[in-house]
Structures are given as C-alpha cells and as structure tokens.
Amino acid sequence: MATLAAAALATPLLLASASPSAAHQDPADRAAKEASKLARKLVERSSAQDAFKHLQKFQQIADTTGGHRAAGSLGHDASAAYVYQQLKKLGYDVSYQRFEFIYTETLAQKLSVVSPAPRDVAIQAMTYTKSTPVGGVKADLAAVPVDATTGCEATDYASGIFTGKIALIKRGGCTFAAKQAAAADAGAIGAIVYNNTEGALSGTLGDAAAGKIPTGGITLAEGEKLAADLANGPVNISFEIRQLQETRSTNNVIAETRHGNAANTVMLGAHLDSVTAGPGINDNGSGSAGLLEVAEELAKAEKRPANKVRFAWWSAEEVGLLGSEHYVANLSGLGKKEIKLYLNFDMIASPNYGQFVYDGDDSDGVGAPAGPTGSAQLEWDINEFLGKRGTPHEGTDFTGRSDYGPFIEVGIPSGGTFTGAEGIKTAAQAAKFGGTAGVAYDVNYHAKGDDLSNINMTAFKVNIGVIANAVGTYAQDLSSLRKPVDSVPTDGDTGSGGGLHGGHDHEVTE
Image (cartoon, rainbow, N blue to C red; front, side, top):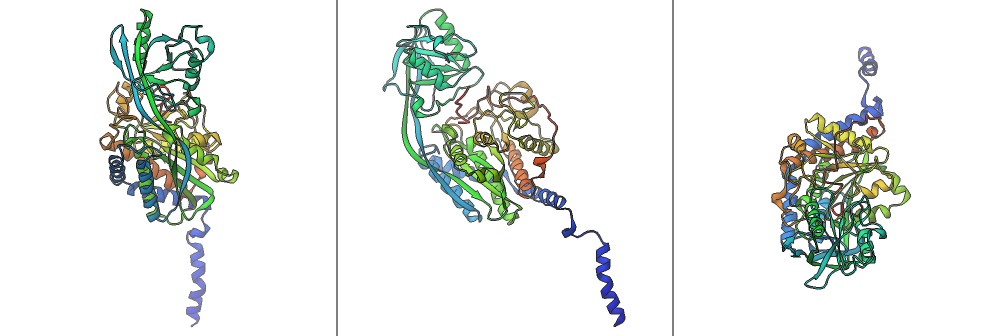
C-alpha cells in the first residue's frame, strides 16, 4: 500500500517536470499553431474542381434567365438564393440585406462614321447615360483639345463649336460625369470618351441624376483615329445610345460563423452580380464560387474558430459598388471597429491571367496611396503564401473599382487578389505568368463570352488557395496584422490598364 501511495504522489511531479501542457503554452504561440494548422487543412481541402461546380450552377441560372445575372434580375435573385441555401446547409448564420437601386440595361450602343469614310466603331454605353431617340442621331463630331484635364472645364469648349454636335473627349483628369456635363453645357448633344490607355473603356456616370447627354466609351486607337480624321475636315457620325433605367431592389448575402469573437471579425467578400451583357462567370462568378468553396471547407473543419468569420456576396457592384457601399454605410460605429480586415476577390480566374495582389503599402508607387494600417500586412501575408509556393505575382493598385473601396474609406485594412480585366498583358508579364502578350487579361470582360469556357483553372486554383490560407490564418490568429513588414516594390501596375477594373468594373473617376 505504501508503495502504491508513493507512486501516486510521484505521478503529478513527473507530469510537472515534462514539457508544458497546452494550458501553459504562450497564448500567442498557441494561436499561431492553430492558425497554421487550420490554414494548411483548408488549403489542402479547398478544391478548384469543387468550386467549378458552383460556376456551373451560375451558368445554368444565367442560361435560364435571359443570359445574365445582373442585380435586380431573376438571374441574380436565383444566384443569391443558391448561395444562401448552400450556406444555410453548412450551419452559418445567413441573412439577406435588401436595398433599392437604379437598375440599368443597355438597349442600344452603336457608333458609325457616315463620312468621310464610312465604318463602324465599337462603343460601350456608360452606366446612367441619357438615351438618344430610337434609331439614334446623326451629327458632326467636335474634338475637345487634349491636355491633362481634357473636357473637364467650361473653357475647354470653344463658344459655339460644340452646339448640336457630338463631343469627342479623351479620358483623364476628372470623372466621366464631369466631362459629359461640361459638354452638355457647351451645347453638345452627345459625348464620346476615348481611353487614355490600351483596352476597351467601360464607365459609369455615378448615378442616374448625373446623366445629361448620351455618353459612351471607345478605345484609345479609335479615339485617336477619329481625332486624326477631324484634323483633316468634318466627320459626320451616326450615334445611338439607349438604356433602360428603373428602380429595383436586390440583396447582398451575408454569412458568418456562429462562434468566434465578434470583436475580432474577419471579413471576405466577392460580388455576385454580372453585367447584363453576359453570365459573368469570371466576373465575378469566380470570386463568388471561390468564397463559397472555402466557406464550405471551413464549416467542416472548424466549428469554433477563435475569431468570427464573415463572408459577403455583394450585389449591384457592376453599377457602382452599391451593395458594399450600402453595407458599410449601415454599419454601426462598433460594427466598423469589430471588422479587423476585409479581403476582396473579384475576377480570380481570368483566361490570360496575371496574378495580382492589392498593393496595401503603395510600395509600387502607382495610383492610390497606401491602404489603412494593416493593409500592408495583408499584402505581405498573401505575397508570402504565394512566394512559398513558387507562384509568381506582382502588385495591383487600389483603384477604387471593386468592393474594397467602401471599407478603405472607413479605415478598415483591406487587400485581396485579382487576375486582370480589360488591360493588356505585357511581354514581361507573359514571361512571368504565361499566356499571350498584347492581349487582354480577359478578352470577354463584360461580354457575352464570359461563360464557363472563360475560366483559367490554374489561376482559379491559386486564388482559392489564397482565400483558404487567409481564412484559416485569420480565423485563429490576427497577430500578423500588427507585425512590421518591409515595403517591397514589385514593378506592379493597375493590373487592368490605366486603373480600370470592373463598378470596379465601371470606373467613375479618372
């Protein structure tokens, strides 16, 4: 008995002298280990093939609802219901956030040179444009002199020169709305804005009240050709821009884990709506499907994350970030403080992709300044993940054209990835990422051809890995957001041509 008692007394002493139990580990070390473990698991289990099944569903929805999934349409409503139902089955707290907006659908966008040499010119109607009569108008062109702020001031329009004519204006210096308004004040009956970089020009006037005259966008090459023709004499054109505009309602879909510290909410988002021109499978079925796949794997792998994880599928992004703006505008002061980071995934499988990471610290020195404190760390963490996997990448500017914009405006650290829109891939990028130089990252951007065949599965897999790693890491540990990081330029650019990328997809400002 004495021997047994002595052995019993010795047992706690032996345990105490062993390695520290989990209860005595440093909490920061424990959080880091849990984060690493969950991140690895999610990266291993999150599958581009499984996410592609969601894209097939989005395509099926578009095919049966008029060919698109635009906000305010049956296609978007069905897409939102599908996402909602999937998340509900997985055990998330899911809600719709309803709001009203002005639905737009382009009915006609035609431009033809009548004289001196007849030809057709591709043009894209600006969102919230005024409309011409059915059949359009015929009028002479008048070019606005090119400078750093072409067409932005009343003094750009010589008295009487633009009355009854269509103003040809180069992009740059101010909003599209300001350009067409100034042209209207000068007597112009329409405006054609041509790009100042390669690629098509897709834009918005910001809101329905801003539209003054029918306005469309054309490429730099076509704009310069028209300007050259004008230098040699009058140019007469046939111009038709017509757009349906009406008030409709639509829903964001918001889902969050039932457990986790709400004071440390981790948020990720992707817009679910397409443009009316096509099904929007890359833009942005890809980001939406990627988030849904990772959300499914998180639900299976971790029922009680340390931090609350919130996913959002935004609506009406394509007409000016309206869903994310509505969400952020309706957050309480506490709600804003609770969101410790926002990661955005918009177009993550472009067919001629570049692997772009949002430049949180402005180390590339392109366009917008650095994001809110913590954005540099988000960029660093994504770069580190890609670097360890040997995946080439470079920076892309916070142009304000996707749903990170409203979060940045209220000081929430932001980041994410993007694989390019209408911008043209350079030779250096083709050498780095593969693909074809001199061709747009997505030749079907905002077009009917943005269907299931428009997905690059290599890019899709890489970026689903980025999402999975971020969710696994930040669900358990936010300490990396507080660590100093080195600012490393990547020779990045906008990733889409002159700061263009989709509501996002339509640019409001120059």
